[in-house]
Image (cartoon, rainbow, N blue to C red; front, side, top):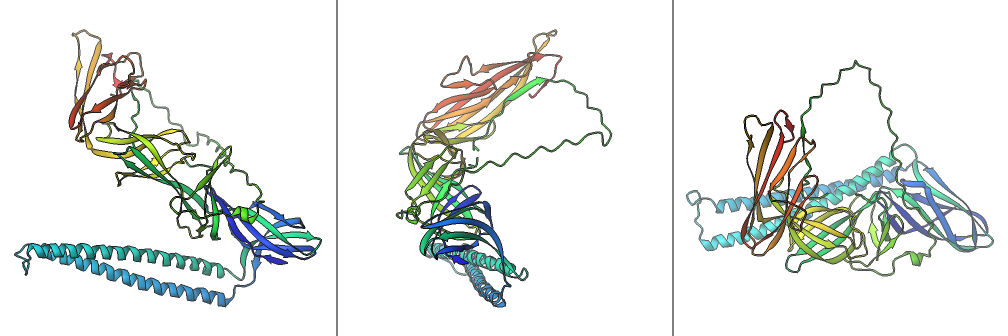
Length: 536
């Protein structure tokens, strides 16, 4: 048997797994020979293993095995324990440094408290010049200590990760007299001594990627800069070092920040007697439904390219790599140019996919009945060749972070609206006015109830702005109930006003600079006097 030294060259990462490609160059003798790929990850999917090769030899057989090694030596355990002790000592040093820095920060804050004490309590009176010097000292030292605390916490986290990894190895080493690893045995037959190349691919679990975005909006230039990034996490048991990465959108993950106004339904009250109570055991348990079958991932093809074709040709800047895209029937694959190292440590590794500028139209939307705020929106179009997958998006407006939102799936050439958060320079106030009944005559058979609401929108900006105001009126579920919109008057949908069959009323306003705008909503509900209406 000959052990093979192989190298990971390329990895395709999916939502909940990854496909790993390895290459090995092996010299083999004449005749039949057993070759072994050793120390393969524990999370490997056996059915996904594929092998191809190049060279003057015949591939006779391939087999996946679980191999149990001999007893783990005490020397190995001792080395692990020694390493763990070194890390523990380092953690003690870091904790001590963190404690001292926190004490230093507290001392600086106590000095500041002394300075701002009333003169009657202070032993020394400070003039304005001394105050300014003290303020500068306080600001500088506080920034220094905060940075030290942050950096020290990062060091502490890294050491804790190292210790956790060693502890797992110690647990594995102490599980009896043997240790299990996965191997793949390959039998090849050659007519003469020669050199061959083997290409191995397999799927492993414990890896995933998800998209995230930064949206940078300029109100003056009316442009939207979208930074499209990916975050990769893996804990497969093997490190991916200096490899090419592909990101597949197969099994794409699938809201909105603006409150959703549901239909307002009203109906005649009808008494429904309770159902009779059955004795215990009278009900039969329903059979559990079968679980939906797991959606299939894209089929994995054999990896036949030469190693030089596998690896990316050039490096690209970290923030804006040259990314190509492959399209197939069910998904897309992003291919960032360059090489990446992603360790099996369950930490986040970021890979940039795209930076693109989009033209945008800005306007506001408010739902005064549910929220007293105006929500800024940017309407734009995906002019790139890349689908924008669902994910979290950080919103920066005029270089200031304003909100975190969610982006839904946006295909190339598709328009989408981006919520930019609340703009408090546009104030919204909603006033329900007292409702009242109108009964015409003593013998009338109808009851008419009036409802009135007032919305006040104040634009404190020095620019003209557009805002959509969303409200609703009741929707009758019975022909005995009649709902009439009195104000605003509505005949049919226009650009300024729309009314849906579910009672959602949308009005478009143009707000003049530094102006106050009042909107009225008035409607009546008419129903039989001897009936009770629910939902009002």
